[in-house]
Image (cartoon, rainbow over all chains, first blue to last red; front, side, top):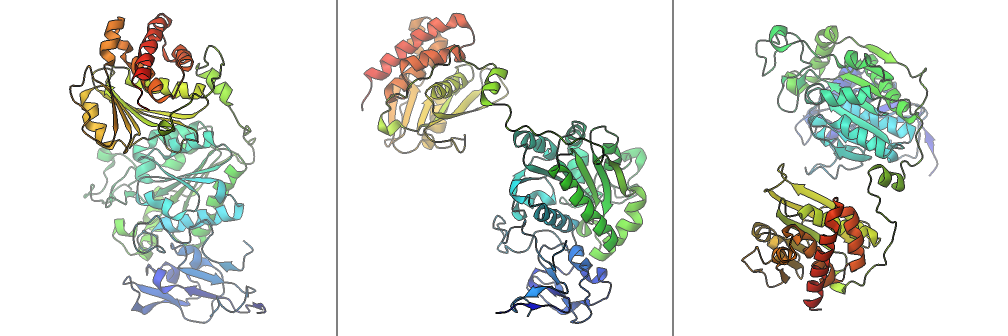
Length: 85
Length: 478
C-alpha cells in the first residue's frame, strides 16, 4: 500500500480513555473540541473533535493529562490509511 | 519535536500490567490531575533523549506512588519522603544511569525536608520533580507545608493562619539558596503557555543530568481538582489567581552554562578497593578448592535463628565468609530487634553456585535453630526434604515434621565441655559443614581469621571447629 500524506491536520480522542476533565476543550484555541452527549463506559462525557478546523497545534495533547486519550496528526503526516480512519 | 504526530510516548508501557485493576490502559489519576501532564512531559523527554532504557524512576508516597505502573524504565518506590535519599544511593551505585526523583509536596516539603535539602546540598547529579498542589492530595486534602495563607483544607477549616501553622514552604526559593544545585525553576500547568514552559523545564532538568551537570529541581504548581473540590478547568484558574501570587514562577537558579560537568568514573571503586576500605581483607588471599558437597545439600538456602547473644549472626556471616573463600556466590542478611542481647535474631544465608537473586530466605532448605522458639517458629517454613539442625542441649523438643531431615546437635553442651559456652555457634557451623560436606576444615580455620575479631579467641574456636567437624562426620547418614 502506498503512503499518503495528510493535507489537513486533525485530532482524535479515544472515547474509552477520556476522563471528561474538559481541559482540552478549554485549551483549544479554535474551539473544535466538545463534550459528547453520550457517556463512555466509565460514565464520563468524553471529548470529541467536531471534524473541521483543527490546526494541529497540539495544545490539547499537552493539556490532556492522559497518556493516550488524544492523538494529534499534523499536516504532512505520512499514513497508510489505517490509523487515519 | 519534528514529529508529525503527537501520541503516547514510548517511555510509557503499552499496557499497565502492574496495575491490579482490570483496566490496563487508563492511569489511576483523577480527571484533570496534573500528575498526568507531568508524566507525559517526562516520558516525552526520555523518548527524545533516548535514555529510557537507562533511567531509574523513583516513585514517592502520594498519588504518584504508582508511577511505576506507567513508566517503562527502571522503577523503585521509596518510603515516604525518602526519594532523594534513595536516588542518591542509586545514582552513586549506577553513575551512568539517569535517576529521576518524583515527589509531591506532602512527601518532599514535609516528611522529606531533610532528604531533599541534603541531596540538593550535596549536589547529587539527579533530577527532582516536585509536584506542588498545596495540599495532601491522596489522603483527602489535608493541610500541607505548602498550603497557602488563608487556604481552607480539611485540617485548616478556618483557613491557614500563619501565627498558628506558619507560612507556606517555598521549596524553589529554599533550594536555590544552596550552593550546589545547578538548575531550579518553578513552573505551572494552568494554561497553554505555562504548560509549554513546564514542558521545556522538565526537558531541561533531564538534559542537565544527561550532560552530568548536577542537581536540578523543577517545582510544578499542579492542579488537584478532587482535593480542592473544583472542576478541572476551575482548578486551573485557581492556580493562576490564588496560587501564583504566593508562589511566583520563574527560574530561581541556572548555572548550567557555567558549571563543569561531573566526571563520571568508569567503574569505581573496584571490589578490591572496597575490601581494603572496609578492612575485610583476610590475612592471606588464599583460595580454597570447593569441597565435595553431598548432592542434596548443594546450593543451600539457610536460615540461622536463636537468641541474640548466641552468635546467630556471626554463625551466618561465617557461613557466607567460608563460601566466599571457596568462590561461591553468597549473601548474608541479618534480621534482629534493637537489642544486642536477649531478643531473638535470625539471618538468611545463601551459598550458591549461581548468582544470588534475592538474599531473602523465606523457605530455607537448611534451618539452624539454636533455641526452642526458633525451632517452633521456623520448622513449618522449611522446604520438603530440607535439613533442620537444632541445639538439642537447649531444645527439649524433637522436630515434628516427618518430611524433613533432623540433626540434633548438643552444641552448647559440647561447648561447655570445651570450656567456653559461646563457641556453640562455631561447633554448629563445623557440624553443618562436615555433615553436608559443604566446607573443608581448612576453609573454616581460615574463616575464623575474619569472623573472630579478638585474636586470643581464635584458638578456642579452632578447637570448637574440630569438635563440631568430628560430630558432623560421625553422624553422616548419606
